Image (cartoon, rainbow, N blue to C red; front, side, top):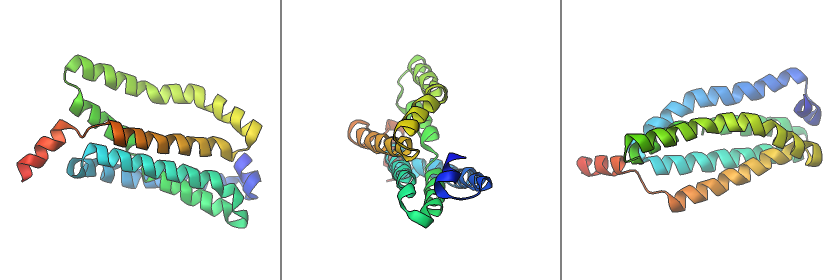
Amino acid sequence: PYYAQEFGVPTAWIGYIYAAWSFTATVFAPLLSSMSDKLGRKRVLVTCLVGAGAANVIQGLALYCGSWGFWIFLFGRAFSGCWASVGATCNVYITDVATTEELRNKYLSQLAMVPLVAIMTGPGLGGGLAAAFGNNVPVLIDGVITLFSACVVHFNLVETPAFLHGQQKDV
């Protein structure tokens, strides 16, 4: 309801925000996941992180867009859903690069914990930041962290051996 108040729209319209992300995630996540087989896990992962980070920045800045704010936020939310295959791509990346089954299980179980930790800590951190600085600040911070993550992935992760081996077969 806080976003509805900030944007001056009926509370029922907040459902459009949830629907926009879910719809675009349903359409684009399978496409991006399959593209990682053709373009490489690292390239798709970086692209998804840049897209998600940019979408969060758009959402965070939407409050400053006057009467268009809600529609810009809705676009940002839908655009965010387009990049929802980060988790699936991470799973495949870990499966490709882990050298032993024990290591693979360790990393996949750690990755599976990320949503749980986010659900436990996110509302408190986001709510505290929103109460102190405004509803848009947690989303902006998330966008900046996601863009930083894209840089870390780009400069520090190697392309998976399975993808590189597949590329050599195609040549």
